[in-house]
Length: 247
Image (cartoon, rainbow, N blue to C red; front, side, top):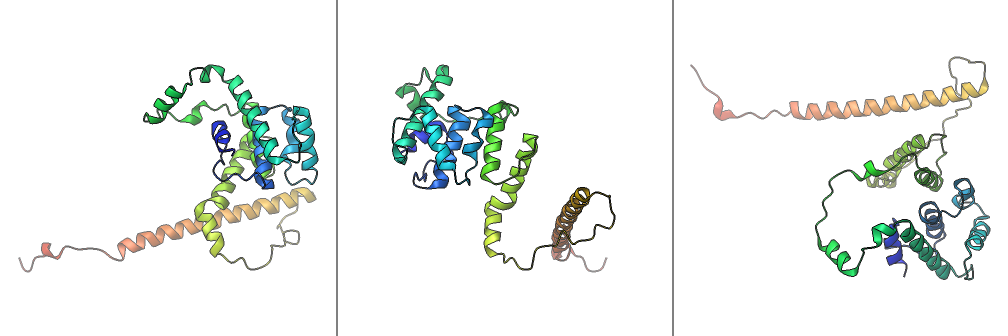
């Protein structure tokens, strides 16, 4: 029942959004506040971004009161429909010039016309805008990634996490892989030198482990390259028709 509004707003999950799913509902609320409604200041949205907090329901109820929602807060369908309607109205207000000529005929012609992308849409993004920073913070909170003071470094960590853990290849490998063994005793490991500061020693141990992990990944790639080369050189193909006997 929310598909058309979700699609109009550009939400990433339109076909299988479930209003009765706490995760779907909380993610949508955070996205709407960050991207469309923007009723709270950025620093005030932390109460909504902290999805795992047991007080999230109370924070959401206060948020609805601040917005002036007229419906019972326990009626999820009515509340979400009202929030989506508010977001659509605010989005239209922010982009009035864009939508003023959006008649049914124009939309129909636009849908039937071929779409030609002439430039990279990322070129139009403002990576230092408050909305972009809020989106990165929201995504980091959803993925439980510790945020760096520089939001671009946080975004890089998110990209690495998505590539290593959430890609189709990584998910398929995780299902087949059996994790065995016990965690590495970082506290008991020997650094090999002493900086004189406990925190620096701990940070140095972590950096060394990350460096070793990068070396192992590099060695794996080298081995894969060697195997690929050996596969070619170990099975040469010759054309016997070109051979000659005698002079």
